[in-house]
Amino acid sequence: MKVWFDLAREMESRPGVISVSTYPMQPWLDVEEGGWASLVYTDNDPQLADELAKELTRCVWDLRHDLMKFDSIPVAEAVSRADAASRGIVVLSDTGDSVAGGSAGDSVIILAEMIRQQVEGVCLVPLVDEPAALAAAEAGEGARLELRLGRAADRRWGDPISADVEVLRVTDGAMATVPGLESHSQGTSALVRIGNVLVGLSQHRNRGAMHPEFWDHFGVDATDREAVRTVVVKTASNFQYFADLTEELIRVDTPGHTQSRVTDFDWKRLPRPIFPLDADAALDFD
Image 1 (cartoon, one colour):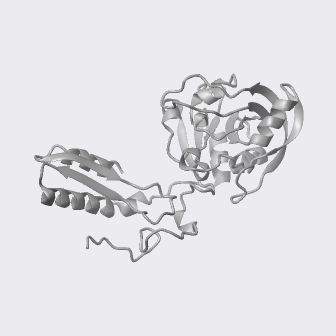
Image 2 (cartoon, one colour; image 1 turned 180 degrees about the horizontal axis):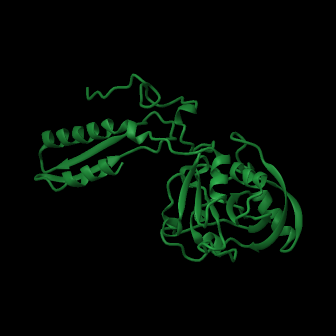
Image 3 (cartoon, one colour; image 1 turned 45 degrees about the vertical axis):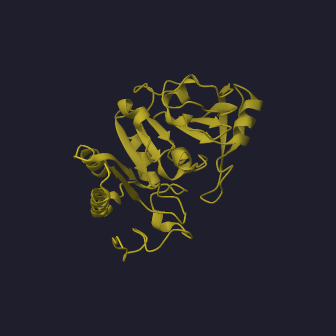
């Protein structure tokens, strides 16, 4: 993608060019206006603008197969690889349950696998689950109880699980100021423990869990490479907040509204043909 972006910036240095913009589309939007676009402003030279817009379009079209590179790995393999790492922090990207991309943040497929494998390293897993967060808060710190976890909002992509948990911390969800996140309301929140897995339960969906500060407000230092082995992030792309701390990033092939396997969705509104859904899609300026 950077090749395309860099070309736009280079074009802006050419004579007569005022502004060049690239408009990729989030890949999970089933809308009639679906597609990518290039927009060029020139100093009263429509022909030049048209030529540059087409140049940008040809560039990204030629990159289309590179942009479809799939590097996510199965859940069991991802959990095992992270737990076997010599040290943390290994970030597991829950690609199918990206909160910033529109998913509910309530998938427990990675959590269930961690429990099944009885991971040895400490793992941090965020989960948007209003009933579980409220139940843990009501039980209070130090309580032990059986909780139904996950899929509180979206049952299309899987089922909830049941687990015996210990409530470590209950909060109102208020976090310290987070760079790049002007507002975040996660409501009643609770930190619960299942073996070596710490689950951060939130009442409301928000982007706060992509930041180490989410764990700070539970009293957990997510930046401690010696104490923490694995951190799950509910995002398919926003890894930058853990970038300076990460020993390894593993994209996990998880199902959901933001999954990488776009050909598996039941598309109804997109204009057709369109790449990569149609093998015969071609570039046509007419």
